[in-house]
Length: 209
Image 1 (cartoon, rainbow, N blue to C red):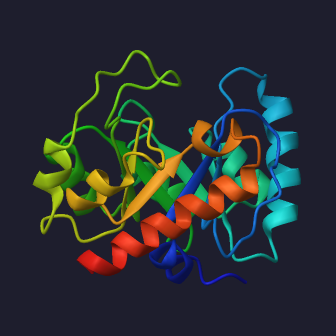
Image 2 (cartoon, one colour; image 1 turned 135 degrees about the vertical axis):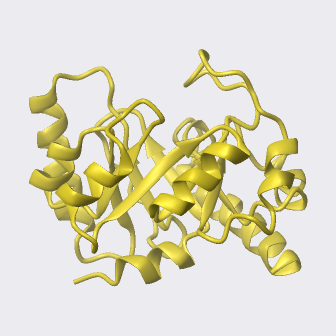
Image 3 (tube, rainbow, N blue to C red; image 1 turned 30 degrees about the vertical axis):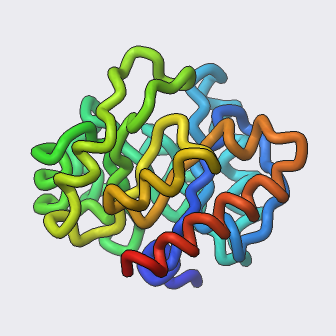
């Protein structure tokens, strides 16, 4: 069985799949893959989740399901990612148990502190920049990242239109980890894109560690 919390702590690059597909990427590069399919019906999401969980079960890549706790449990995933309007963390923990991972989307310091206090395993903080994948959310900018520095002790991943061109300023603001979607999936060579992102994050991580 994976040592989930250890793998989470080591993860620097988090890939979000908006469609039920798996891009073959090195688990030495992508630490976490999340299935975030808000379009398909739940039977299709479950089928995709089962397939992904099976493919990643013997790898060092954690598999997380967005929103659907029932699918996270049934598929054998490593955990679930919840938004601010989803099931409360305390109830989610009762359903998933202490060994599964629960991540929470946060948009400000107050929400991040609350998630940490209530036992979240990690936080997704953003959107740092405006993003086409979540146009309804206003960009929070780098200020919130600076506020988190030193206050949030659990892993947190900066998210929201992050790519090679802005990683340096993201890490300079205190973020050691990033979550991306289009920066990898829309690339001509997803493996190369993932490798370059990981390299840049790791280089900057070492500088602020």
